[in-house]
Image (cartoon, rainbow, N blue to C red):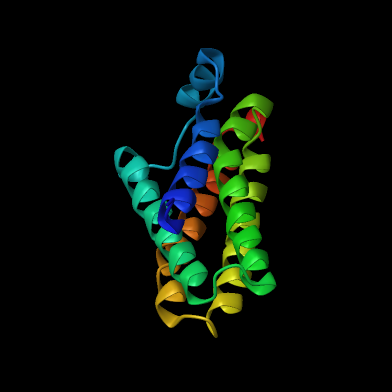
Length: 157
């Protein structure tokens, strides 16, 4: 029998693969952008997001197991799915459109969705809500960084 954590993990992994939908020219565009001087942790960003996605999947698992198959749980799973899609869309959409403004909008949208999701699951499971705190803490940092890059790269706003 397929376990719920396997399904949640597989869905998260398949959606995360969309982050690879970038071309070498997209990557060149991003690499040439100027960054704030205080951005010294760029190399850690993939690790940070990996931890955040693991926490998010674990949170979804807890919510699913609390009341599997109910309409409310399916709606919450839809919110988790929307959050991951918006979060993963940040890189390929911003790179393809070569727009830091779009990246900032997607980052802010992810934060709002995560906040709504956290509030919605809080009555279901405090643990599941706490697992979304890393997203709530990191997303504003990433969004702010992208926003600051607009002033350093006005031609790529």
